[in-house]
Image (cartoon, rainbow, N blue to C red; front, side, top):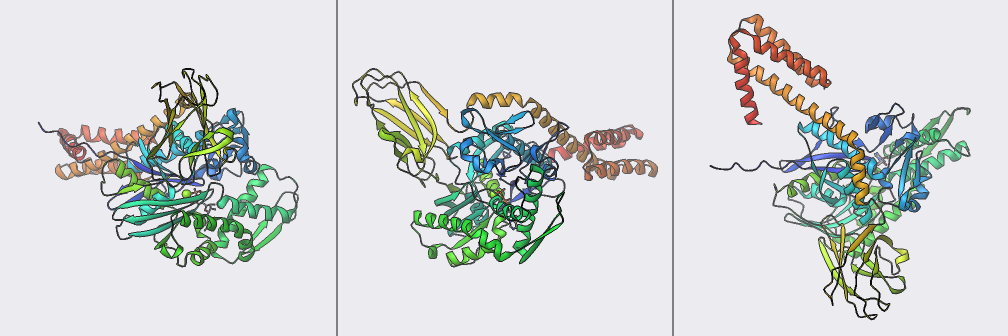
Length: 607
Ligand code: ADP
Ligand code: MG
């Protein structure tokens, strides 16, 4: 007996963006984007909790932003894995309500419900997943998901939790600019040093990579998780509100003005002036004219911040601008002409525009997904952590165990002692950041080592090990060396959900599990109908039937095919499939039905 080789594992790549999300899959030498039934690749990362009880995600939700501003959640990625205090300023600008929940985590309140940003992200991921399943005609259970390179540990953990909640196994978290470089360099002709500049809706990332015969090594990364197109919209919102002199805009007005501001911004990428006609209740219509030069003046400080990040990444990689062979643009905001001009001037070369800035990240994620699925062994991705990791020592100093831009996976062990005689437990606080004092860094979690035998101060030797996995996520272990005592360890995440919370949310999402099931059934039904149509066609060629019967069968098959093309609902598909199968089953001497069975068997053994 010979075992047939295992079917290649289906793993998709997902770009979970602040503004838009999308999925892609490996195809041939490259990858292809998975589009929805209208052929659209981008799924707005927006969730609307409709007053009628429906939860609507994606393009439809975006359209509802103006009608239900307080119920439509967008840019939730800006809140994921963050404390309420950290997002206070931007939360004030959002039309929906953000508040501080347990452990000061940022949470989103809609009507009488309360959501963690992870849950919103999970809903977006579910939509991406079902869109992908529809496009592929088969269930998807595993994915590679991208995050901004500049995401810290808390934000990465939170993204993984969101995948889990969405019923997706997250095989790897990949940094967005790194993924984009894969899409850029996959054709094998791009060996050299590239700078990937990714300016999206909410975040900015820059990474410098060396590509050498299929090895993609990140040399340095830098960025800002609070800088992107949303901020540029906000500049124009303020400009517009200044012109209409409204003291306190309500959520409806704020949302309308924000949508108008984004429209102006996008117009200014292709035209040198843009005009907005504002018709607000109780105000005379007002024309607001903005020219590109004025907008560029407002943008300049933000874009300078992105250039500062580029310089820092260059310096961390010990490179000069002249040593960069190519500049790759990623993210919708790189369509702003000033971005291109500034980069050209800064790096002395025109940016490469061969990869679609909207799709590059998802395409690269799909390539990495294929590598992790074990199908492609010719590529190797060596990524880095963006920020140093360390532990608090006496006096609130930050003792770094792993330095930023270290290639992952990586680990480091350091010995610590205790300062108090006879102490049997020690609390360790873990931080991420570059500053010397922990108060200027971000606390990732605290860690208690219990059950130490009482010893004089300074005698215990506690070995603390930091292990950063390929996702850039940290795990910490500790052991008292002298006694060999491996004490009980408890890590409490400072930002993000505890395991119990994730479990609870999973239970809460039975409802979602049900809609998942319905979606899967719909896919199965479509596949069956498709096979039925082509099976019938083949059978008709084999059978010699009287013309009227041939006509009836053809007509029924055509009707089913039309329904498939129109993406009809499950019940009409089911009815038409049943009709066709009845017709083919009862026709004289079962000629067709047996031929159909033969053809269907044939079809299935080929798929
Ligand atoms: P994210 O990665 O955050 O999901 P995207 O890469 O999809 O973001 O980029 C979305 C941002 O790009 C939005 O702020 C959008 O307004 C902006 N954008 C899209 N097209 C243009 C354009 N032509 N000019 C300027 N900004 C644009
Ligand atoms: Mg993006």
